[in-house]
Length: 287
Figure 1 (spheres, rainbow, N blue to C red):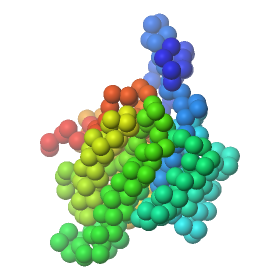
Figure 2: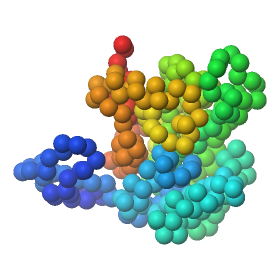
Figure 3: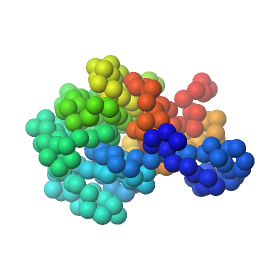
């Protein structure tokens, strides 16, 4: 059996309704992803409802060892509370808009672990006043804040991680949204930030490809998180996705986490510079 895979004979995925137990040849061929011995850093866990936390849980279940960052002392407690279920993982303070703090994260990782296998970037922020209303009313500082936090941070997070990936390379995953390509009323400046993030992701995939460092993005449908509460019209957004998507439903955190697990594993060794939609098919529907 290839490295990184485990036999799953008879195991049923309970995430989706109507899933039937595996039988016959399908039962023998079923595998799961094993990240035992792999280590990675997760940027952006806010609390137990965040997408970053769902990804972290799935990576831990697969056997990975994780380190987490928190922005400042005020935000340490919710991150500590969420990650306490994992024992005592490494927690490192890091405001990702400060390059010195990003470097300090990797300096500590280098000292404690020497190498890493993956990085998860789930950092995004815009001023509340710049969400909703007229897009043209976005002020200059609000534009800078959204682009710096939500897009630019991917560059130092990946660039300064690169020396810590071993000879076999590694993988980076970030999160984007369909508003990078289409207009979602209320999402405003964050759509611009996600468009920039996606271009950066492709640029970084090319830059680090010769080191076998893969960089990909997941474009998730709307999910109920703390950040989503600040988006005007979020309920309408989820309703529209549910009504118009081919699968006729909204996605859930587990589906995004499963996709991240795949992209961070050796099973996705041939994928880089890609945007993987996890949106119940909403993105393919014209009307």
